[in-house]
Amino acid sequence: MKSAHHADIKGKGILYEDDDAPIKLVDRDDSFAIKELGLTLIGKVLNPKKQNVEKLLQTMPAQWGLAERITANDLGTGKFLFNFSNMGDLNYVMAKGPFHYNFCMFMLVRWEPIVHDDYPWIIPFWVQLIGFPLHLWTDTNLKNIGRRIGHVDTIDLTEGRMLIDVDSRRPLKFSRKVEYEGDEVTIEIKYDKLFKHCTSCGMLSHEKGYCPSIEVIQPSLERSDVFTRMQLPARQSARDT
Image 1: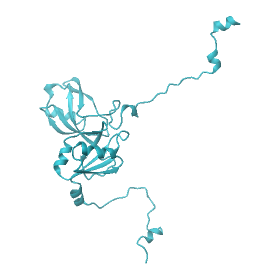
Image 2: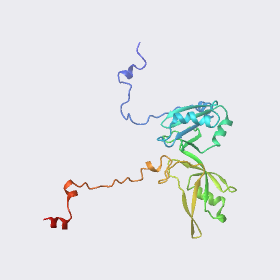
Image 3: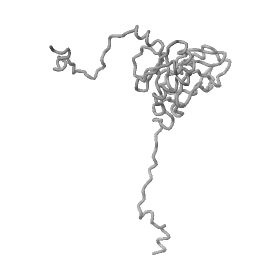
């Protein structure tokens, strides 16, 4: 009796052309996703040099006081899952964001059926605008500014802040100029619970010491030979002769 993959063994069932092209997937199981992943958070570390996923998965549930009620999975490439048994615990954790481990930020969001190498990439930050003229503090103006930072989720006019979904793949902006009737003012952008980041380029994926935008210039010192070092001043050598 021939095996089911006999044709493949002989090479007749294998497609060699365009072998590196993406493999198209056509099947999906929404019932599994809804049932099994509805109580799941997906996360990703932003600074792999400083953040160990295995240790993060051990540390964070205990830090939240839920070590016995959360299971975790390391997905590789800096990504991971936290699985909850009830929505109350999940919402309790989400209310603690944005998140950091070893003083560096990491992403943690509700799982969604998104297919992308970068997923997840959003960090929700509460943002305050320092130096913003009070008479211009309107919902419309704040939305206009917030859209330059990320996706505006919530505006709290009473506290003077916005909840903004920030794209971690882009550098943070810490100041912007705003104009009203020809007059300009520079406002400072303050991110609540922001930990280590690059103070040079604004990225969350590294610190200034590892910033690729900073060109390291090595001083070129001319190496003098022994005869150059031993050469006497012109007047001294003339007197000696």
